[in-house]
Length: 402
Ligand code: HSE
Image (cartoon, rainbow, N blue to C red; front, side, top):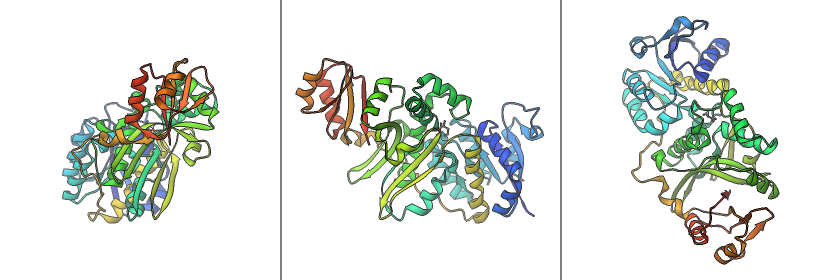
């Protein structure tokens, strides 16, 4: 039986999960792919003397490139560099590349897809969004005959885990983060999770596929969860809502709004019931309606499943690789249309500002609280920011409703 040779770049949580999956599920994978998969090289800076894969470890990427038996390079190093250089070199050497690295896909996906198409090889990245959830391939293969109106989702397992623990158990932000790190969900630098950067990369990738436009990630309006306070959790509970960090790509007649921020969701909405490390991506399209993809968004086994699953189209289609759509880079910022984005908002100001709020915002609904907390009508970002500037006191919280 023919063997398909792979090299693993990065032997961390996901790379280790891929090696384990390829080993433990050898029979299932052989049946699924119709051929055996052989791990030929593992590239990492470290040695792993106690690992059963120790003899495959190399520290030199040239060994991977030179090995003609390596058909597919699986890049799970994370970060932009040297992942970018290794990906370009592997594709130019005629090797397929599979990645779980959302940073490199969001930053350079257009270049990689172009090189892969020139070389007649595949560049695939199912694991880059939603961990183990099949979402990229269904978005490419099952949805685009529709008019896609919105793609929105809980795209970061670490922050969803933290928010779930804050809501369900009243945990502190710090304890919940430490727990997520111990379970291997968080990025090497968890700032990318809690500041919303990781979700921003993922919604940028989904936007490229849904709207055929690759925006510069640095221009996407991005807020994380570090500003969410106990008082906000209590206010949300009073309103029968939950706070979730969402990535949203709204495709309207006046252009795209792409953003990452915490949102208040009614507790019976499908996305608000997504708890812990689980992720979900909801697509709203015509005439399809709403569909939701749900599953474990981080962790070794789930992410490894998506990486190995990407071997199927590579082996099935060979050089006639299905072309990945989208990834057309645009030269205007994603933030262009954000000022006009309309939503209802929960706002908290220091107590004693109720009169000023009525003067500037009109007849808003106040929430019973030690602070001056209220809900605006559905208005644009620009209108809300101008009103808050006119009041001129520190804004303790501003959270949008979905
Ligand atoms: N740190 C990421 C998360 C890992 O928590 O979702 C998966 O991309």
